[in-house]
Every structure is written in structure tokens, then in C-alpha cells.
Image (tube, rainbow, N blue to C red):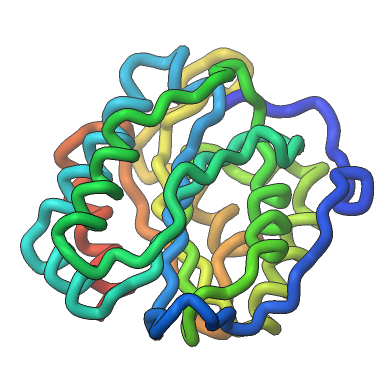
Length: 240
């Protein structure tokens, strides 16, 4: 990811916040809404194969027998979001529906497999993602947000991020993170993976919720096997 040079507040971004209450009227909706938030900032495309590891990791995790069974059995309402900078127009949501059978499950997989970002030179704003999530109506009695990221919250964004996180907590939303250490560079130098917690600590302090109790999984480096393993474990914990 690249560090963005400025912050746009919620009001100037033109976001209208919705009340976080379950929205019914399309039939019997799920008890659980799962928002899968995939990183689509510039480092995902300019630094080795990060984008493909994230994409394939989600596909492999969805193919896990227990994850697939839990999604379909519980008729989970899934939102798929690709997030990046402080312009909400750069947050894309190509999938938002119940995953209740093989057809809807395959449609979710196909969306992840084929989605392409129209702009691959985007910066980073965790707070804009959190505020955008607040603007979306809840589609279940319980809501879990699942964020993938390889960069800490930048200092100028911390206040906005914490405020948005705190509001989500008040609305009963659980925010969890999969934090990839060493996925970005500081002053153009690689970040050491050994014992690194820079991203993890930032997510625990500023992004994951405390009540409902959220959690952060740490992955050291962008590697398909370790990323997928962590994501499978994370999804099982969220769905069970």
C-alpha cells in the first residue's frame, strides 16, 4: 500500500449514515451478515503478486468444506467490498446477497475470481472503509466485518478511524482483521518480518472492535499457504 497524503472527513466525502438496524422485506434474511473487505490499494498491484494471493486465498478459504457448509447452512448474507483510499467512489461492492445454496455460493466465488479494479493506483484510508460500512444497512441480526490489510493506520487517520470504530461498536458490529506484516515498505526499505507487529498493533488499537469482541490474525508476509490458512481459521471462528 501507499500512504495517502491527506484525509477527507466524513462530511466532505458526502456519506449519509444509515441506522444500523436489520433490514427485512426481502424474505427471511439471515441471522448473520458477513462483510468481506479486500484490500485494493496500489501495493496489491505493484508489489509482486499480492493481489493474486489475496484473491486465491479467499477462493481457497471459501472452498474449505466447513466454511462452505456454514455459509450455506446458515444462509449468511455476504457483502464483498474492495476498499482503498479516502474517496468512497473507489470502494466497490460487486456482491451483496444471501449465500443460501450452491448457485449463490458459486456466484460469490465467480465474483471474487473475475473482479478487476478499474484503478490500481489508489492510496489508503481505513477510516473511509469503516465509515462507508456504517452507511450500509444491516442485513442480519448480527453483523461481522472481515478486513484484509497489510498497512497500519497512518497517524493523520487515527482519530477518524477510532471514531468510526467506536460508532460501529455502539451499533453492535464486530470488526475483525487479517493483518499481513511486511507487505509494504517504510522509506522504500522492506519491513523486517521477524517479530514485526506494526500492522497488527495498529489494527488492534484502532480498527478491531472491543465490544463485540473483535480479533486480529497476523500473517507474516504475502504467502498463499499461510494467508489461506489464517483466513480459513478466521472465517470458521466468525461463522461458528
